[in-house]
Amino acid sequence: MLLEKLPTGLKDDAVAEKLRKASCLITVDIIHLIFRPRTQPGSSKDYDFRRGSVLGHWRAAFSDAKTTLDAAPWKRSAPVNFGVWFFDVLKDNARR
Image (cartoon, rainbow, N blue to C red):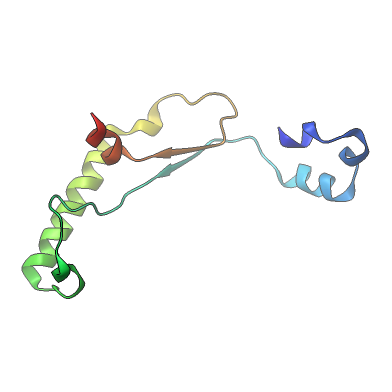
């Protein structure tokens, strides 16, 4: 923990004590969902809000969310006191 790395003179500081009381050793999982179009959008992305276009985006978003939830990488064991763990399943799958 970072507070343990403070020099002896600062470990007993009032601010350090407040931080110690507010701190906790947990792992936080953050799932990153972002719209990544399958094809390169043209300039129409700024003004094309036709029902069919929007429904297509919603279908893609639903599919991306389902893929992420099905993969469930947060269910794997994290190292002890790991802190914050970010997951971007779709980006990771695109690299493979």
